[in-house]
Length: 199
Image 1 (spheres, rainbow, N blue to C red):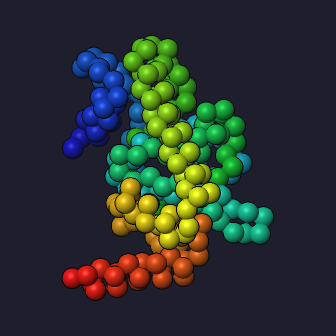
Image 2 (image 1 turned 90 degrees about the horizontal axis):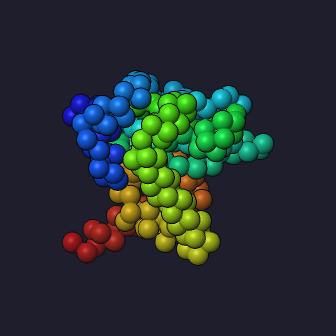
């Protein structure tokens, strides 16, 4: 699938745009190849872009003063990622975003995004709707962290986002779920054993 049709198919899930509008929207993006382990966001640097993932996988994380890292979010094909606080307020980043695989993204510059919103209210509606979805996702995550056990959080994530479980490293998933890699490994082994016993 062509890069242009991918992002146009995506926006059309939220707003109805004609071919001329699709062309305007598409030309605002820049296609970039990102190598595995390459950073697209780093602390203390500006964050000019948000990224739509055409193909690949990314991890956003923070590192404490003690050197412990905590995964904030993931993105695979058809997802967005950046340091949103830094991007939206045009401040320096406070997190890392790194490619977990060789990846292809469409980068949208902050200024171009503002121009799109001014140019056409449909574009503003689109960005508003994906922001609302992101907010709802973050709320679900906070609630799950407050109300679920570690095993329940893993099962919930597995049910909602099975493709992520296949694509992201175990250490990164454990960090995202707030558990040790060893504990996540035990949960996975327990699930595999249960599945085999039910066959």
